[in-house]
Structure formats: C-alpha cells, structure tokens
Figure 1: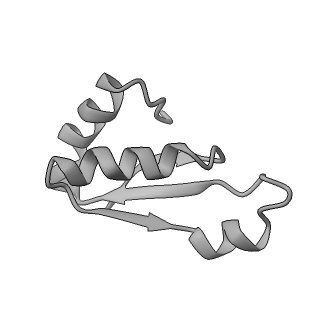
Figure 2: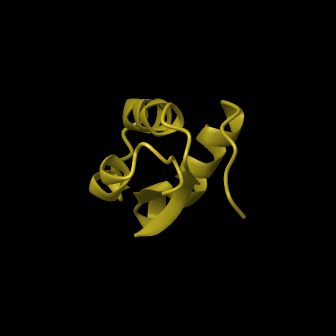
Figure 3: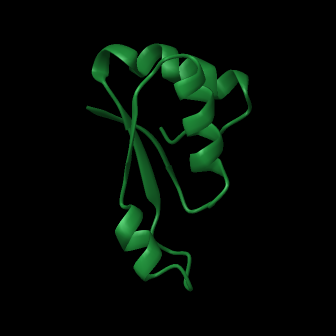
Length: 71
C-alpha cells in the first residue's frame, strides 16, 4: 500500500475515491474514525491509499482532475 492523498478537505476524498473506482482502482480510506472524532477542529487529515502497482496511474488521474497531491 502506498499513500496517494492526504487532506483535511472533506470533499476531496469522496471525489478522488469516485474517480479512482470509476477507473477500476481499489482505494483504501484510512483515518476515517479519527477524523470523525475530531471533525469539529478539522486538523486531522484523512488519507487515501492505493496498491503500489496502481500508484502511478492513480496519481495521474488525480492530477488530471485538479486534485492537489502531497509531495
């Protein structure tokens, strides 16, 4: 597994998930429960993971759709 995306923006994870699943890439949304517990502060980022072999194409898909990725 490789981290693809890390964000505190609550709208980006569902959008990125839909894009990737639409291309047949399995995604793993982590930190969901921690984000829910502290959602009032918005400081805990959520992460999206993909399999290592899907990371390159997943990165390309998100960049083409204007989703900012961490470095």
